[in-house]
Length: 396
Image (cartoon, rainbow, N blue to C red; front, side, top):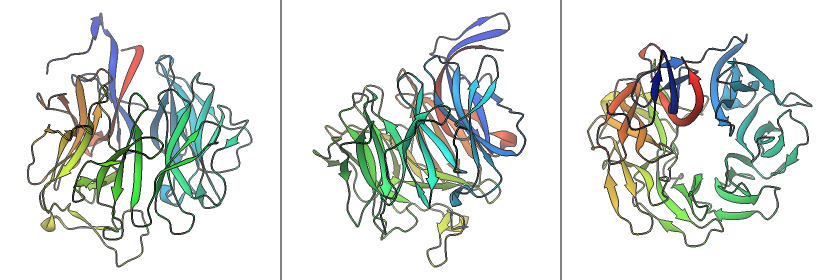
């Protein structure tokens, strides 16, 4: 594959601008966009069964990582640990330990300057949003007890506002909210008792939000949605798709390699398009939601590959003129999703799941050309949740 970043070889070392991080069987994988340098981070910490890469510091060498102890994360009683990982020294230093009273604590973002973070503690059956120092001190609550279950928090490009979705109180579905960084001047961007609004993402200039609208009463498995954009104050809302054709609640793989996770739209670096994971008419994944029984595992699906139909393709939508560009082909039995732009806008990493096979990590040029397989994950058991990182470091 042609390599468009500025890697250059010096002896047996590489100085790299861009890498792609991904998740595989609870481990953090790293690979260069040209397919070289595949490795999996290994941390010698007893009792931790899975790891996730979190926000990056501005120095390009340090990252927040999260570890999970044994348990069921969807029940929010699993103990997590937060660390700062230094890619050069390979050091791992635990943070957020001061005055910690909750087992599950996640880091959503770092605030400008890298001295404070946006965190999501699980308190009294609700996930809240707070800001705190890296050691866990000086906690400022942005959502209060009784407001609902909040997450998917993202700072605006200027670092002055936060957007998130929150469900409740009671049976109210997810809605989109924006608040100042101090928790004041909250704005409800999108809310309706019959619509589940989910996964808000800022445009690069901070002038727009993209998010999903799931008609959850007719779709209890949250498989499908439409794409929307609006101003951060909720005005000028536009529905970009029709017929709930955005793949929202992804589910894929075999019983041994199953995976999932909500899809999120992504703005292109130039702010002119939004990614769209478009389903073919009548598409059905091999994992069929079972609404007649209680959801005990936050998945609640049966593997019925004989019922699978159609697939999904990755498209780009211009939210201002409605133009749609197809990047991957619509192929029966092939589900392309999770498109993630490189910082320079030249490439897109994405996930590809074929019916009956583990998920794979792929890459393509920004126009959809030069599609190449990058990784199949640990022991070929699946790779997903790609993320570009600018690793300003030297790695062997």
